[in-house]
Image (cartoon, rainbow, N blue to C red; front, top):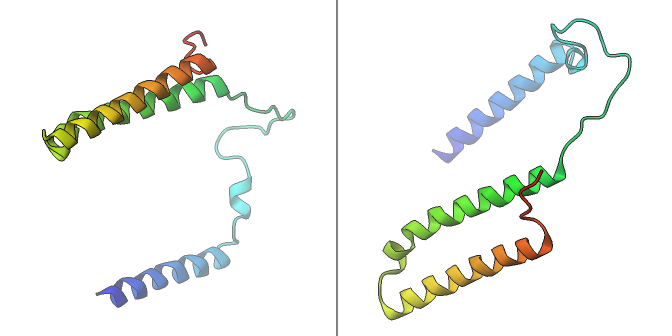
Length: 109
């Protein structure tokens, strides 16, 4: 079964390479695409690092909440399980407090 997957993967990759070489390669990807004239002045796109860090923090906290909901079912309610659960909660709280202290949780964008 593994050999069949490897052979099919090699056939698809090889076919893609052959079609790319016959079709002219990647030269068609560098042109404009149905959007009119080319820009005369190339402007760099502005990317807010502050917004990126805030959204990354939101995603991490969302993931942590999802893990915390299932944690009691995974570790059980034994003494060791509750201690592990509390250690993880304290680590999450300390990480949040550090982010707040470092200025990463400033809601004014």
